[in-house]
Image (cartoon, rainbow, N blue to C red; front, side):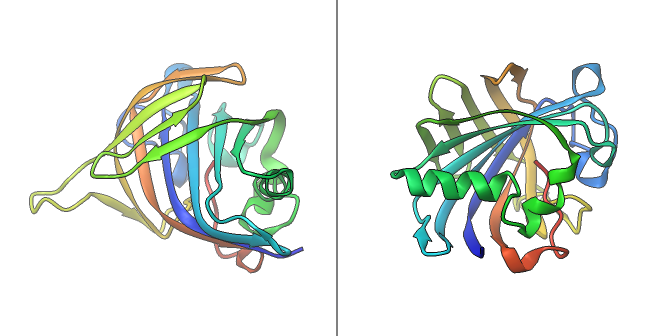
Length: 203
């Protein structure tokens, strides 16, 4: 099975300052754990003929230690028009069809659940996300002295080669994973079956 999806992701977590998870550092959230939510707003996509353009998926995470230590708990909310689209997105983000997400499937100990739900993403300089009944958050990028966004490049675990970092705000309560956002990041993404071994995504 082959897939390709492109779009924009926005993520928040409860880590203080700059989240160390992308460089396999120990989380700086409460109890030295990372609780987060990542929303993938898919502009174009396809899995074996199933059109995924215009769909959205939210991936929730609990990392009890640095990422490579494993024992992750994850949950997934899918906003898709058809059951075929929902099944395709579930297969991609659970790593069942390979590609980048297949690479970290072995680090997941618990899948807390997969649900359908309404996800709304608002763009602009301070993008916001609403996952109906579960999560509301906003991402505000840090900026340098020239006004451009502060970025991180070539991280060990990253959903894009370069991504913006900044402040997250809001609250999330889904799959028993409740947290207040402090850190945030965002970038355009492209994932495909053929990218296994090239991209190391962080959930």
